[in-house]
Length: 440
Image (cartoon, rainbow, N blue to C red):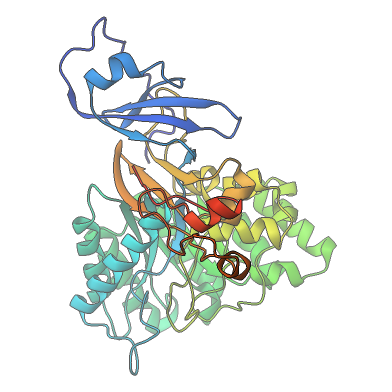
């Protein structure tokens, strides 16, 4: 498991010296506490954070490059704790989705890049093993992982269908092979096995043997089964995660609260999917996030299905997941964003990220001044992974001149400036500025 403690930054040099080829200076970024700062990155970590302009004198000579983040809010980058790389982007296919390795690898790579563009620099992908696809889909996703090295971190969860009885012997053999191949997490859907408890026991035994985390799909509609799972999972050190747990919110409040207490006591984390279910799970509601958090359960939010048959319009956008947690489920914006960033990284066993010296340089800059506005209109984004910019998205909104302006003979133009993103018509009519297109 990665070390969760930030390493101290290297001691400052007395002189700027030659440019560090891995260094980057982020200038004029706004933080959630209202400060405007410069941030110097190097060696994949945050080297220094100072008031705006304070790092410029030495930073411009000592840094290879600089990025102007004026007008942007700088945040810890999101992480994606629940994706389905093998079925992503298959909704538009004619007939069943192809399981051919080259098709799975192409879709998995494209889906990961899409989520990276949204801001997620680390992703956990659930991949089915056994049945028709055997280990082919896992092989393809692992190849996509290697192709993405340096751009994003992609880890895989092996998902067998059946693990008990006569048919389960093949599933167990396949799961063992998947771990040997490189699947770093074991999981699956125990609710589909004739013996759900036996399925969980088999997964936990294998995970304990290899020191792997466990990530299981369940609708969480059976409180007795959840209680047994919590009792069994308590001793697994790498941790156990459940998702999407949508049916937990449909249980009587006292039953759901008691179940949440049991999950918290066992250290079981829950990943909710506010953008919709996956693998046939009900898409009408997410897990009861506030109830779980009140009980002390670690709660993160994931995207789930990304344009496959389970959710043909899935976006794979962590900021949309945070938006839905705030707008539909009543979380404050700060807690909603925590669910897709800090808590998501914790569930994935990744080091904490803060915009402070010594922490990993996994960052997301979004145009806006406050977190609430960013979750509302998160259009322009700049993504930093391991201290370098790996993705940029720019959005410009244009308005044509009003009918009144045109009728009065005004000279307002209907096109927007390509460099500033500010409509000339908007400026002459006194309309508010809507965005900028000049991504640094």
